[in-house]
Image 1 (cartoon, one colour):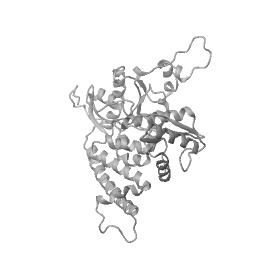
Image 2 (cartoon, rainbow, N blue to C red):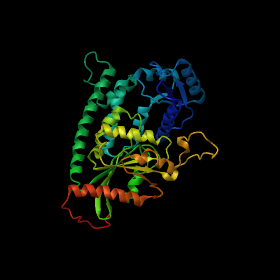
Image 3 (cartoon, helix red, strand yellow):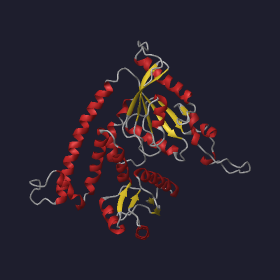
Image 4 (cartoon, rainbow, N blue to C red):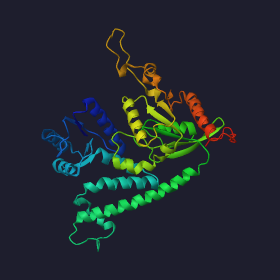
Length: 388
């Protein structure tokens, strides 16, 4: 793993990014052997890192027979070529790694099409002669124009494939829009949050269903929708793909339809992993993404999950230095900005089922308020206890 500490970042922040990159690599099936960092004003335009650091990495790669070097920033085509030539191993950047995980996790035709589109958009500017095998997908006879090189042929084939995938996605999006319209007169609730904060576990706990949940990044790619009934009130709950820092732009564009569930939701449940050391930044990343989707003004419940895993370092009574974030207990934390927020903040453990009744009560009141406003003459003709 290789990261650069630029002028606007601290050593601690870059280390957090690399820790997340390591978790991404683990999710993809790789084992991390070494983390390299270098302090530079800006990443080197030729090799990302300076000559001295590059030599150090090269020696380590050679000595330990390293297969892959992963860089925490998006690399340009020339940087990838230079690094591959120098290090003699496969070079990935953060975007490529995330795309690889998405490709592995995609299950439905919708997700597979979106991932394939994002992969081709990522590859197009990075084409080298190694991609000339792509012409065999359509056959080479009669395709190459006068004076057209192999790489230009490959680019044209990929552009055609991108256009085809975009048309396919438009068709799928229309089908999904029709499905959403057919869901009837029910309030829609969407679970949103950073990846691996426990959204699927919350979904399973509330809907009594079995949505795939795993302690890995991007365990859920496809939006899952379930009917939920609390007391006498039915509504729909959707579990959406998790957000992440530095999500590849092509992937955001491709997965925009996945987030339509967020746009069309009446209530958002923003799930936060309170046991994570950097949960406040993760919360900020999600808020920024919601703002891009024009979904920031929706009624929201802040659900701080994993309270069972929350730990803190208790200060010695004689220690007069100001308390840091690591010294705050859960009760102390609740008295900070969370107490002043206009958004309801709840603290639960979905896996241990702690404080679940309080969460259900607040959710019921939010959904009921919208339901009554929208359907004032509806008499809740549903069987109490019906739950799917």
